[in-house]
Image 1 (cartoon, rainbow, N blue to C red):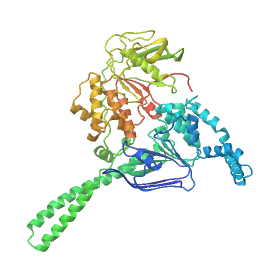
Image 2 (spheres, rainbow, N blue to C red):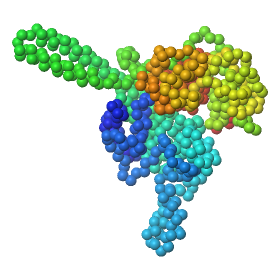
Image 3 (cartoon, rainbow, N blue to C red):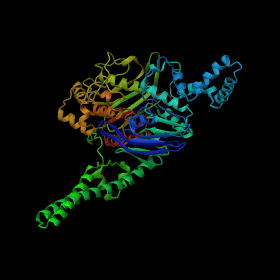
Image 4 (cartoon, rainbow, N blue to C red):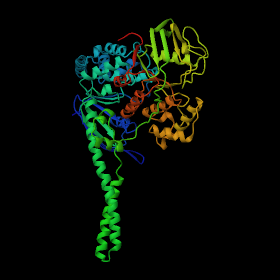
Length: 578
């Protein structure tokens, strides 16, 4: 065993977030940490890394073991280069390199220093540090970060910093790695390489993730639920089966509690009546005592919070009728997406591209792209990060917003495209995008909903309620306080979130705001850029279910194999196939 975790209590003010968290991690074991948004996964990560010490409990790591973690914040980086930052995070490297570089000039006949230098030489070789810079540079290439090794770390984007954190962990050669959402900014090739490394790595891992491709490869899943930690042996598929069984048992227990509470309430009324009818003092005291005992038990049961019950939809279909009926009564609230489901729509073409080539500067990013997307159909844009998927989407949206066509890219017709949030530009080619060949057309009367990774800067510092109102008004849509509160309920926000700035919301909460923004104008075409990032598993499932039943068109980018299998559609390759 390399880690033993006990958190007796973790609170934020009067709110108790965790109680009785207890689990251990064996040497070399790969453990996935999951849980609904807001249950405390990031808080647990902070406790495990030692950044958060305001809790009751004990975190014990095996004596002499090396523990590394991905950093969540980056302060005081200064002009440190990417390569220097990664190597600083490799245990022993900096210390050993310092000895090898400085001792030859100072040790002379000092036997203590000579001995330390000799040991450092041996250790440096054992750790394969002579080749580590070349290996790191090669790994950066694999993650499409070629040439960034000498760049200052502070100049990188948030997504690039996350990838650098993963590269740092992969070369740490530690005994245990704590990794937070490692694949959120990876394409399918980089993610495959990360998963391959997970298989071969000797270190134990605690990985906070909702990426089902990663969870499919772990040895165990720990779910944070209702303030406690539940352990499930095996990978994601095994978790779903075990969760269905354990949730069925938990529902039975909860139903028994409900019945007991009904019974106690009836008994209290009976004891009151019998007490009032009694004339003998001893009898009166007897019924009074029984009434008080029943009230105490009722209060104790009533104080227990209702457990969270969630079973994946495929497992629900396999439940017997009794348990399925229980689940419909007890299942946890989930986001509610309202998408058009009018089967009478015609299947006319909404997006069409013919031999399209786009890029920046002198050379195209891609060429020869053809798209024929009609209502009720889906098209996946597949390609490595940087291949041009986002460029194509920007070009498509610009053609929707442009008052007239420019170059070879054109709109199908004039008129109001009614787009959710289209990048505004003076011409048909935003941000210097050059149309090299071919054409791309969009039905001008199509209402478009766009799911983006980043919240629009116009709303980022606004309170959630104000941001929703402003977003609707910016698009010429009607909105009321009643509708805002309904949206908050549909997307699992509470009244306390109404005044919280978007900048202070969790990643999952920001993702839910992006879903509200995407669906605000009742779109006929959805453009989705990695929509499952930051959503918890029940929310991902709800999104997938809504999209499967959606009769509009879907153009999407996703490196989540489970999501791709659910949504399906034609695959359009952007750039070179790897």
